Length: 145
Image (cartoon, rainbow, N blue to C red; front, side, top):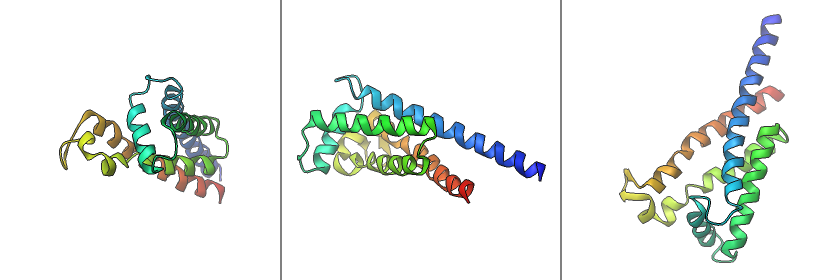
């Protein structure tokens, strides 16, 4: 019994650490978007959101909404608050980050389908975050049951 408790505490601590580190990334990238011209993803994000919303949202509004979304995810993951909700928000967000591969292939590929531009590399690293978010969501279900 003592071993099981130690193992659960150890697993919970690891999950919290991983969640917080992903939260730091979200918080950092989200905060950058509050300041015009600071985020390297700003123009791509505005163009992607514009395409996704059929131009309904003004770019200046869309980037602030994205900044709020990412910052909230970051704070929730760092603070381990509403974890399941935060992880679902993050999953939706991270999946949407791959849309430029469909919307703007000329910006993400130097030679399709394998040679990525720096922007494409910036996006493809999100595969790691996607995998981690899936594991965290699965683990959060295990720890609650």
